[in-house]
Length: 163
Image 1 (cartoon, rainbow, N blue to C red):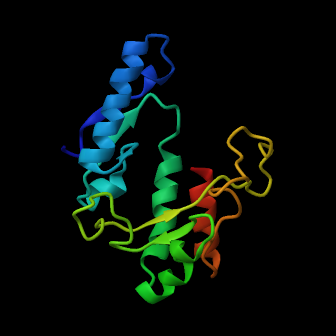
Image 2 (cartoon, rainbow, N blue to C red):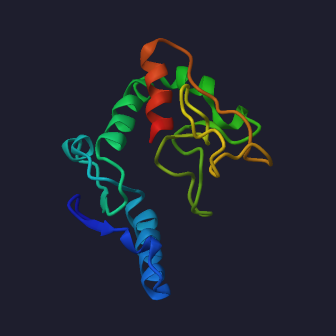
């Protein structure tokens, strides 16, 4: 799919079940065929990264842009440095996913992507601590793993949690 494709998620709150199912199928397609979907990102476009334009969600474009920008210093680290935050060392599946560390194709040797998994966490000064998004129990609950370092790593955490 070209980088100018778009999906409108307004139907996520529609009372029309058919419209919600159609949207769910489009999101599934974006996740399976494209790999992810995202509010249009000049940063991703300029890098030639294929992505979907998602509209109708109400998130200002500055928020995902800041998340992407804040992640660049982390992903520019050496593999050895990133592996200090390896998801395999986390009891609750939080942290860095190296290339080929996940495998959604049973016949494949691993997925060709790297990522960073994290969950809900309250940012300093955030009044939404009692949010329904808060999830502290179970296998996926608990604290996040964040890279140590200077202001760039603090901004990585802030950018991710804000998004």
